Structures are given as C-alpha cells and as structure tokens.
Amino acid sequence: MAQRQHALAPGLTEFHAVMRTGSYAAAAAALKLTPTTVSRSIHRLEQRLHLRLFEAHGRGIAPTPAAVELALYAERALDGLALGLHRADLKASPAPLIRLGFIRTLGASFVPRSVAGFRRLHPDVQFVFELGVTDGLLDEVAGHRIDAALVSPPPRREGLVVTPLFDQALVLVAPPDSPFATRPEVSLAELSDEGFILARTGLGTRSATDELFRGVGFEPRIVLETEDMAMARAMAQQGLGLALVPGPAPGDPPFPHGHVRLTDPEAVRSVVAVTAADGADDSPAADFARFLAAP
Image (cartoon, rainbow, N blue to C red; front, side, top):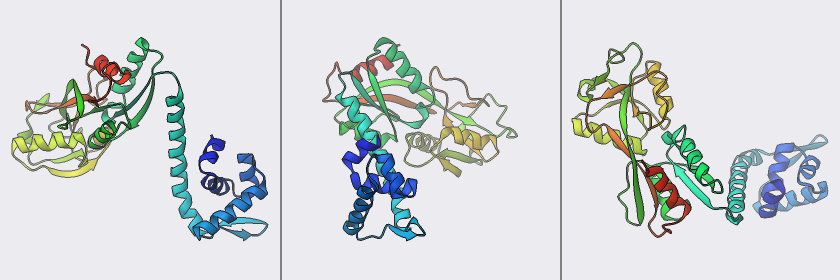
C-alpha cells in the first residue's frame, strides 16, 4: 500500500515515512527508495512549503514543531488515500459493489446480519461501508458517492427512493436505583422532573426524541448528550440520568440491562433504506433495499 500511496502523493508519503521511522534511511527502506532520494525529496518539499520540517540532531535528524503538527494531518490524508485506493480496486473489479452508509445504531447487529443474509443469496456482491448521520448520508446518496443508506427519520427530499424497513421503539434505560427501573412501562409525562441522556443534536435519533418531547409538551432537562447510544445506556446504568434511546432493532439481542417501555404511541422512529431515484431498478443497491424490506 505504501508504494501505491507514494505513486499518488510522493512528498506526503515520504514525509510521513520519515516522521514514522525517525530517519531518511529507515524511511527509504520502507518505501524501497534510496536514502539520498528521500533526503532530497524532503528538502524540495521544505522549499515548496516554505517550512523547515527536520533539523540535524546529533548524528540524525529531529522533526520541528511544524513537522509534528503537520504529521497529524498527513496521517489522516494517507488514511483517506488508502480508503480511496481500496474503493478504486473494488470499482475496477468485475464483481458487483454496494457502497452502503448507515447510522451508528444499526451497525452493531442489524447491518452485519443483513449483509450476511444478502451475501448468502448473492455471494459475488462486495460491500464497502460508511458510518454517518442521516443528513450527511442522504447527501452522499444524492451525490452518488454511496449507493444506499440506512437512516432515520425518513427523508423529505426529492430525487430519492425511500424503502420503509421497520419502526423501532424509543425506550427508557434507567439507573438501577431509579424508581422507574423496575417498571414495565411508563409514560413520558411522568418523567418531566427527571434529567435525560439524549443523542446529540443533529442525529436522527435526537430529531425523533425532540419531536416526542414536543408532543408531550415539556422541555427535557438534558444532563448529557452523546452520539453513541450504547454509551448512553451505560451512562444511565452508572446513575447519570435517564437514557432515551432506540430499542433493539428487529432480530437484535435484548439490552444487557433491560429497558422500560414508553406507553406514548409516538415513541417510535422509522428506519428506511434510501437509494437515488435515477439509479437502475435492477442495481445491486436496489436489490439490497428490496431484500431488507421483504417480510
């Protein structure tokens, strides 16, 4: 992979290799180049960037503070190149490919189980995955950067095909010593004096819980926000507040510490598969959406 990244971005790759190995010689060995080639390349890079990246230190070299800062971003850039090369390899392959995006709460069990079931029927189909939030994933589908997305709530946009999948209950996870922890069910109106752990603003789950609170008619007292619903449940178990989270998806295992059902009829979120409206109806992504929706 390093040689392929070097072909795309030689200066970036050589800089990162010197930072990682600590010397021109070691970087050259990793990249199958000569130390002189790497040394000259770094000097040319310094001239073009108008930055001093390395200084003599004893018999070797040491990075400057500017180099240390730049290295953080260089590594991220190379990670992006590695992903791009992987996706390019898959695109170049004759095997069908589905670029699938999904929200975090579906990644622990629903997505792996669904992909495994689909590949048992279509073993030649390859997948690449992208984790994101609903609005961002919809933009990716509309821009044809991914082929399908599993999101909530259903979008209100033109140019997308929306395939309903299932409704997922919003449930309460309470601290062990909470009077609500042993209740089989509770109405949200009973919780108006409690502190809540919610999904962070901008997530689809937060949109669903905000709408639920508006329907009941009170502003929740938010003690913590997180994008990880497993963390929200764990925080509730530690006594930090009441977590309002999506319950297990169909076929998922139950929560390890259980949950309390909300009696409010509106305490649900709808999960859908989204593909581009101008995509082929017989594409692998369209087939996958139909597979997910099948009873």
